[in-house]
Amino acid sequence: MLSCEQVKEKIKNISINEVVISGGTKDCEYKKIRIKRLEGKKGVFYQIEKHTENKVFHENTEQEKILDKIFENMYLGFKQCDISGDFNVLILMNRKREFTIASYKENKNFTLKTQKHNKEKNYILSDTENIPWLKELGVTDEKGKVLAPKQKKFRQINKFLEMLSDVEEYVSENSVIIDMGCGKSYLTFAIYHYFNIIKHKNVRIKGYDLKEDVVENCNRLAEKFGFKDLKFYCEDVANIQRGKEDISMTISLHACDTATDYAIYHAMRWGCKVIMNVPCCQHEINKQIDKKAFPLMLSNGITKERFSALLTDSVRARILTLCGYEAVITEFIETEHTPKNIMIRSVKKDKDPEKKADLKSELENTLKHYNISQTLWELVKNDTIFEKNIYGNL
Ligand SMILES: C[S@@+](CC[C@H](N)C(=O)[O-])C[C@H]1O[C@@H](n2cnc3c(N)ncnc32)[C@H](O)[C@@H]1O
Image (cartoon, rainbow, N blue to C red; front, side):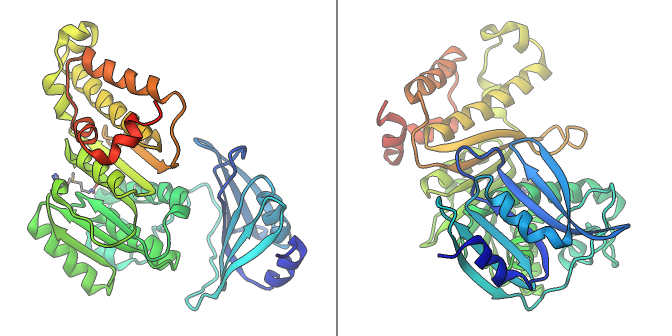
């Protein structure tokens, strides 16, 4: 075990690009703290971003004070600190505020970031960097500039990566991430890039889609760029089988209608730590629901459709909660970009929710009231794997 001063001594000569402080305790006010190296008019400084569930607070610090600031922020109730620089360092802190350096690796691809500080958004994928797969997927031009019609897509990819960075601590080295309904795979490539290129973390990524030509093209691109741990398969989400692998996370973005239910069902059965879903085309409940159950809302086509979509996603989030996940329904991107902007972001907590019996009867009563069945609930109810979760300890 090391003291704070001993750790500072060991890392004092590192050139730091970024620091992520994570693993907050239950009482910690913040979800995560990110510290970035920036250049302003008066020279280099570090910007500290403190993330709560839905807000980010900023503060700046001088370059000379960076080490003090790292520990000051860890003491707010965090257990882990990842430093990325010419050396990548992982520091762990126990309850007695004693430290271990869990990993200390030279970063051979290191270049000091000289990001300008301005009012522009600091994207994870920069809009000035030439990223070959973004060009091949038609997002950028030869020089790496984002094409006008793809600005929305570029923002969406970056927003997704920001959300991914909030849960990256649950994605272990050498684990697998599965993208169900990957389509052209902008996000699948982005996840690969984030973990394997930006974070130097070896993570295998698999994408599944129904369309054979799309899958073929994605495999061709992955091969072209030498992304050996990125593979695509032609398969219906409902039929995906797990190999002998540790699947830390699944995503499904805009996987149509009940494909999202199968995506969540598989992920829970496989015990994935993180499940990220942006559902779309939630037709199942819309087709069944009778306007008499709630005439004020259900007599109009648009309100019926939106109500059914929100009900579908609330039911899904409730099932995830009953199965031991902390499921948060959050906004993915601003509604001006797309109406399909809800994300269900779930992290496995391995413990029963409080008042589980009440949560379960509320779900069942709702389905009964609207006289509807819902695919994820049917799958979970009829699978013995979930018996303990949804019926145990009620
Ligand atoms: C709207 S696209 C979204 C693609 C990508 N996830 C994204 O957000 O950019 C939906 C994709 O899901 C695929 N899909 C729909 N239902 C599916 C199923 N049951 N199994 C596998 N793929 C499915 C479609 O072929 C399509 O490529």
